[in-house]
Length: 206
Image 1 (cartoon, helix red, strand yellow):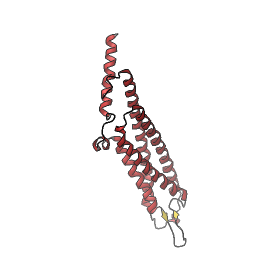
Image 2: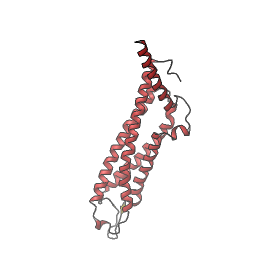
Image 3: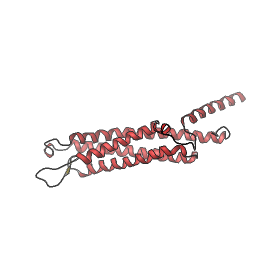
Image 4: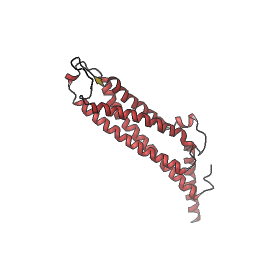
């Protein structure tokens, strides 16, 4: 019985060493190498770039006009809601990425495991929410593009930009979903860290 408990304790402590190796020590200074090389941050930067492509494509080439009309109209089936949605989601996703990139930099400075868990929980919720918004955006833009009338754009102006916005909306579904999945994994590691600290307070000290 004692040998079995000792073996279990050894396995728990081995896992704890692995968790501590992956994570920065609480309160440790943040360095560019530590945070910029993480998969989480890389995905966030990719999502940030995708959001720029989406709203940039629509703002720059998503509105057309004809000599017979005095005002611009949206390239997606003349539906202003389609262009507005794409721009709004792209801009707010851009800002959200910047906010959470700042959190990635600050995260190693958070010494409390409970505070870290709160930050990661918010990351899970926000990332999942944005994955959903991008899914809606992709379906909306793709549908409106499919039913667009050729006579509204006889010269095929802005078609590459319109397709790019749709494509990168699709890609963004996966980058945000993967970000949420990595945040879930990080949350599990933090939960284990908290439990370990309760069971072995002396060993859990950095």
